[in-house]
Length: 508
Ligand SMILES: Cc1cc2nc3c(=O)[nH]c(=O)nc-3n(C[C@H](O)[C@H](O)[C@H](O)COP(=O)(O)OP(=O)(O)OC[C@H]3O[C@@H](n4cnc5c(N)ncnc54)[C@H](O)[C@@H]3O)c2cc1C
Image (cartoon, helix red, strand yellow):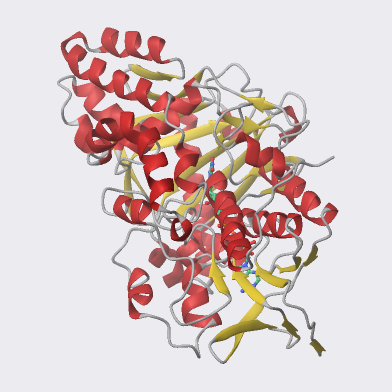
């Protein structure tokens, strides 16, 4: 079948994740006709949720930058119709870390409260704590969206100077806190509890402190809220905005190949053999799949291949979701427990277990009941080795019961209250979204990958015209607002190529 369309204004987008949907919305706003091809039967990609036995298990948003009106990223969410009429929960505490003797670090969202609490925990570390909290306060004024507002390829010297002026007050904090990981920073504390707890307060221990600080600073500003209704509903709102703007989404439509003629992308072929043609193609899906599979007949620059040779860290995870017949409303919403006896899960040793509940969103569980999730970093290779054998499902069940056994110690009686269990391994993420190694954010942000974020990954391929790459593999560290921004900036670039003024609008 051939669906040839003879116009220079058509764009094909591969993937209805947040990046693809955002690109589609901004393309439609600027007069382009677009079609999105999505392998799954619903929008959102990694920004998703799923139902099990009356519970909704959320697989993504626990903080959304841009949840606060008038704050960085918010306007973009308004343009995308994602926040209108949507409530957000802004927690008083970002999370907490609890040791086996009950000693607790509460990461208050309010920075004055956090500083007082840290000093009370360890007066001897007061100077370090003040330095840290001053850094956090500096980041409350940092508009991260500045880094993503315009394609770097289009930035003139004047633009760089403007951004430079705005970033000037942050040069010192960025340099100080960008070059140190949470675990290295923790080693500067004298208090043994804080040495163990600090690396846990930003989700992963190798995170550059600057990145973690931005998270807490945005929580302080009430600009990192949890959307009520969950991640899938959030994604569906953007999909609806796209459809309202006249876009078209083909679901269950996996792209097998990007069609190239005379060094120009001209369309896509689906696995079911249909071919679709357009003036431009935007890939908003797994980066490795694009380069090694979808463009397999095209000789892509070696430097792009190298990004995917395994030397950069990728974050694969195991998510165990539980539907529990108990109301956790009055429990802290996110606790990382420090274990005295490390436990082995899927071949890896874990000295901490992190548990979240979603009771602030009553739409996710029946009345009086709760959704809990445990997320762990895991090895993709471990699951890959056993995939396709009965061992895989046995292992899923086994790891879930080990974790439930551990939870019994934190919440006695929970075992008998569990009504639904769901396990998502990196292979689950890979199967549903095509992401290499089931990665939750493209490359993980560490000291090693931070320079990539600052330098930026090219969104085009040298010598291949009218082809663009966006999303979490083009924006190291990923994140829902950042990938949506990458959909926005690519349209700025396309408008520039077509000598048009880029426009964004709000839903009526
Ligand atoms: C557990 C978890 C928690 C997270 N928490 C947060 C959070 O709290 N805050 C935050 O900001 N970010 C969070 N993230 C990160 C965020 O979800 C991702 O970085 C972001 O959603 C990636 O969007 P994307 O559009 O770039 O890619 P994806 O979501 O991967 O979308 C790509 C889309 O392309 C489709 N596709 C792939 N290959 C093909 C093909 N060949 N043909 C057709 N379609 C194809 C996929 O099905 C998918 O829909 C989290 C991620 C995970 C997994």
